[in-house]
Amino acid sequence: MKTRYLFPHKYKALGWILFGIGMILGITLSFNEFEYPDWTAKVFPLIAEKEAELFTRNVRMEWSDNNIADEVASILIIIGGILVAFCKLKDEDEYTSIIRMESLIWATYVNFIVLILSIIFVYDMPFFHVMIYNMFTILLFFILRFHFVMFRTRKILIHEE
Image 1 (cartoon, one colour):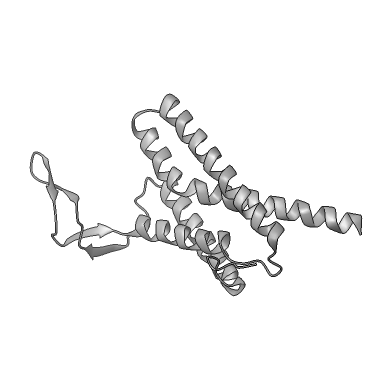
Image 2 (cartoon, rainbow, N blue to C red; image 1 turned 135 degrees about the vertical axis):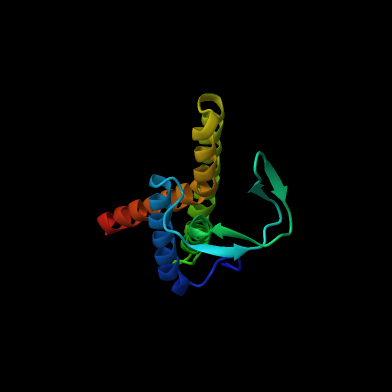
């Protein structure tokens, strides 16, 4: 079976580490209103807002200072999640591919059902927070379902032997 779009199994542990660090940092930032820790760096935004005396103005292509903690957390979650979700298993086969595909479809459906419910029932700043979390939920739902189904399958196979 060809698995040309999957990463080698050796990167899965790295994925779990990056994903875990990103989740811890992201949860910490979320509880501290995205202001902790103070990792200020010079950034070159394509589009940003800069406070003037009375109004906020759009700034494009201009170096500015920004706390990059939320960007670091997001990138760690995404890269770690992709490595965890799309690394080969030690014993990758046709059945694993089917479970992987079904889990991805299931995660997509659940993700968009949650998004639709959020659009209907959540407003203002809490909706913005839901949208931030929604960037990561499809990966999270996929990882949870795929590993749950694989665990359950192994448990059934061991029980039958």
